[in-house]
Every structure is written in C-alpha cells, then in structure tokens.
View 1 (cartoon, helix red, strand yellow):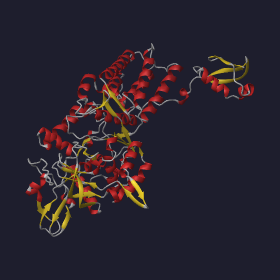
View 2: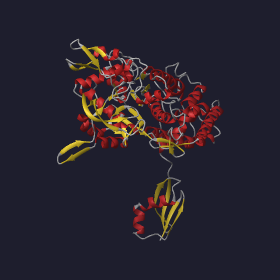
View 3: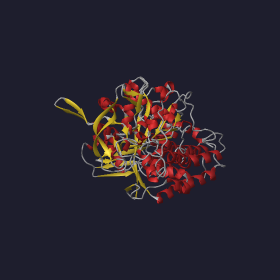
View 4: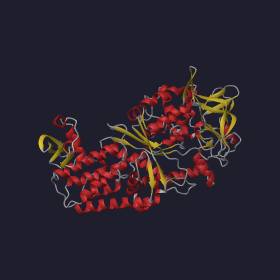
Length: 609
C-alpha cells in the first residue's frame, strides 16, 4: 500500500520543511544484509518517522555502494564477474530485504555507484580536483596488499594489516595518484569544534589528523589520500598520457570514461590494473594535440564514490549536472546521519574533505556535509562480536519471515542503548513478539467500544507523562527506554476495563515509528482515511506533567511550626530533606540533631529533640 500510494516519496522542489535523513548505503557484496545493517537502518528510520510526524518533509533515500575491492573480492570468491554478481546482489538487497524492513525509503532517488550515470560525476569530481592542483601523480612508498593485489590508503591499513582481508601490508615504491587532503588538515581539525557529532567520531578524526607542534613547526599525522587502485572494479581515472602534452585531463564533455567489458578482470599483482591489458581501452587520442596517447588504467578508490553520494541523491534524476543548485541549497547539508563509528577516518573524513573542496571551488554553498552525525553501537551474539569466521552472524531474513519486521525492529532497538549496542538472543525477540501480539489483541478488543470523552485525571496525567517521555527519548535516540515506557504504559492500559478513544489512538501513534506495519493495520481498522504515518505525533500538555502535591505539617516535638508541599509518594528521606530547608525547622532545631523523626506519609513529619 505504501508503495502504491508513493507514501515515502518527497517532492524535493516544493516541500516547505525539508529534512534530509541519511543512512550509510550498503555495498551489496556478501550474502545479503546482516542484522547489523538492519540495526543501523532501523535506528535512523525511527528518527525519520518521528520527524515526519513533526510535520517535516523527510527525504530518506537508499542506494548501493557497489564498486570497490569488497564487491570484487566477493566476486573472485564466487567465480562470477563482478558486474553480474553486483546486479544479482542489488536486486536481492532491494527486493527481498530493504523493502521488507519497514523503512520509509524514497526509492525514486535510488543510486548505484557502478552506474555510468553516477560515476560520470565521480570522474567529474576527480577532474575538478586535478584542475585545482589537488589531484597529483607522484612516486612514493605506498602500502601494498599482496592478497588484494593493489595499493591501499593509509586509512585502509589497521595495525599493519589490510582492513579488507587482514593480509600484512608491505611497502612498495610506486607512482600513484594522490588527493592533497593535507592542505585541508587544519580546517578539518578546526571545524570539528562546531560539529554536532558523536564525540568518539570527532576524537578519532582529531587523533588521525594528529597536529603536533615541535619547536614552533606544525606537523600532522595525516598523509595525502592515495586514490588510485590497480583493480578492475571501479571508475577509470579520467586522465590521458601524451608524449607531447604530458598529463592531460579527459574533457568533461567526453565523460564518462566507461569501464570496458572484459573477461580478464582478475587483479594481476604487477602494479598495473587489468585495464592495462585492453588495447582498445588504453589507446586513444590526445584531446590537446590530436596525436596518439594512452589512458590511465588505474581506477579510483571506492571511498571517492561514497565521499559525495549524499550530494547526488536529491539530484539523481538530473543527467546534465552532478547536483542541482537550487535543490542542493534547499536540502543540504544533511540534517541527520546515523552510521558506524568504524567509518570515522575513512568515509566521514573523506566526505568532509570533498565537500570542502567543492565549496572552495564554488560548486556548493556549505563546507561541512552533515549537520548531525550519530554513531550507533555494535551488536554481539553470546557476548562476541559478530563475524563470519566465528559463524555467529545473524541473518535477518528468517527473523523477518518468522516474527515479522516490526518485531525485529522493536527488539533490536530494545537490546540496549542505541549508541552502545547489545547482545542478540532468540529468547529476547520472542518476548517482543508477545508484546506486539498483546497490543494487537487489546486494540481489537476495544476498537468498537471506545469512550469518546477524555479519560479521568489520573489517566490523562499518565498519558501525557508517557508522551513527554517517548518524545524526549526518540529525539535523543534513547530507543530502549522509549520502548520500556511504551510497555509500562501499556500494562496500565491493559488493566483498565474501558479505554478512551484518545488513549488508543495516541498509543498507536507513539508506537508507530518502532512498529510501522502493525500500527498502520490497526489504524486502518479504526476507519482512518489516511496513513498513521501522515499523522502528527501526540503533543503533551505541560499541565499534566505536574505531579499531584500534598501539604504536610512539619512539627517540632509534636507542635506544628510550618508546612511543606511534597508528592504523596515522597519517601521519609525526601520529606526530611525538604523540611530541613525551611526557616522554621532551622530556627527551632538550631543545628541540634533530632533524636528521631516520625513521618506519617501525606500528613505530618515530626522532629523529636
């Protein structure tokens, strides 16, 4: 129904309250999405659904980061051409997984980094950096992965090992393409102070940039970004070599430089890409002098593909420009980005650099890409980090099949604080399924006998306290405590013999961002003429947040000297602390300790000297 009604699509040109809700697009390389992806996407989607219920036009696009070593290594393992395998995997990701997890994805703006209509503009960005003197070819000692048979950027070597395959990286002297990110080191560092990002990500970037002052000389740990790769599966670097003219950029009107079809795509390990063995690709004409020339045969690092993808989503329907000026100014920078902290110094640092360069060259009006970034936690299984080698990776498909997407979503968010993660267990997920079943049965039981009037004062107070709690928790991504509050409130509702219409409707609205399918179904059963996800999130009335107060007599040796106003459920210790702050008690006790204190809850407190 959502797809038929295009419920999640947004008119980017006309909407008045834009809210760009971004999540890290996956690389379709393995057996499919794992539960960690669903954890990340669900947390981002709940926030997006909540913002939509605040009246925002939420743009939540999705795409596929399908070029690069990850995808190619998987293709090598499977013995299938990466082009064929990527197409197959993208279809599976989209149709059997992403469309089933309940996210409000805006599929009309899907992008794929392997599409020539996309990488044409990746190559265009390379040319902008080249023309600005920020893309240079130089000989340097570089990290070489003997298993992946390509060079790696410094950021892709963790503890001496290739971050993709864990092989020991070795040093080789090679001529390579670099982006001069070092020229931006201080700005990348300074801007961190004003970014509304998770602190651990900012700390990781500060440490990686690593400013040191030695005897008045400033130096940085950051090195230039090594961009070229000696592999097949990537966008060819748009450069031509001419004996007469030297290094010549491919003219923009000749983009894209298409990745040629070949069956000999395996990495060579020679220091050259497989493209070097395709004469019809290599041999070309110099755009300057018209003489014989050779194409660059390296492809660019897939982290360049993902360093600008968020700029492309809103303009994905434009083939004449990489990003539409008016649309970009309206929708960017990104309002909220949720993703993994492991991308702190790869994707997130590179995206900031590319955005700064495009800003400096006059292409975009902002220099930081993401207004807010929040890092989510990691899921474990029986206390151990999920990994293929341990055989404890959870495939979400069978859980969606058996329990439904709403159960999986709500369970993942209930596991622990969203920024810390939690331990996945089958026992826990069954409990969430029982909770949603009870909500469904309760709504069906009461839907035809709802009381039209407002509930009693105590019920209203509890309702508005719950609305306040859920709203506050969702805004600060405290999803586990929001769900706990929904469960606690539901237990109270279940004990009531009659339910007011406002209690049932507000409950479904509060549950909707977590469990979008079951709440939509129940909303339709109530006779609604539009989606629950187009409704406004309940607003709390501050008057109902003030808890009931009682006046308590404060006595010294049995004689009433003053009164205090406290909650009827206040403990003896709370009542004593408040009474001791009054002038009367301070005057009569004159610093002497009471022998004992007698407290009659809600009536009196007596200090016996």
